[in-house]
Length: 214
Ligand code: G6P
Ligand code: MG
Image (cartoon, rainbow, N blue to C red):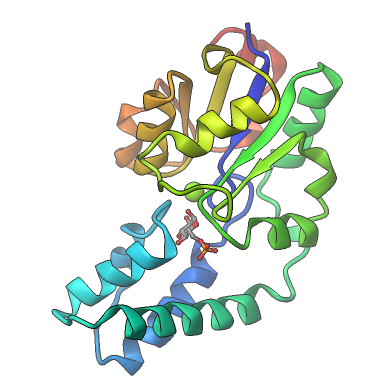
């Protein structure tokens, strides 16, 4: 029985990777680190602090905790500037329609995101009221690939993990979903999604028939 669908946000409902990239690249420049769009792929689904650590590793730099916190804060301030004007037009194709379809069919709609900016983004996209539960980076203590975010999402709507399906664009998220005992659907073209139970290009491919066949 499919009773709840848990969505990752970044890369599944909205393409924020380009804004994260702009902000990280600006920070990397200040640190004299060369950070490319290819490197940015490694940051998908990864927490803010871990993302910074990956960038520091790329640049062979070590900093203390306080310095890292300051840099992560600065990056987030820039990121918030970049997403300030985001609106519904940035919702990825088919996402809103699929969410509405699920609600009409009495399936719980849950967010399971690593981002601490998730609620702000959902508000900008006018999607915040579509979710029965929102679990974001402010709710969890363990980052994906730990299953915590998805287990908490299932619990929030009172659904058994085996009756949940997760839509994810990142490798860490696919692993987290599988560790939670859920069906993991990879969204996107990346071959890093080969571990997903099935892979789709975008939510526009989804309908009730396809969902029920899973
Ligand atoms: C998502 C994105 C990551 C981002 C993380 C934390 O998983 O894919 O690129 O680093 O959220 O986001 P935040 O908004 O809290 O910095
Ligand atoms: Mg994602």
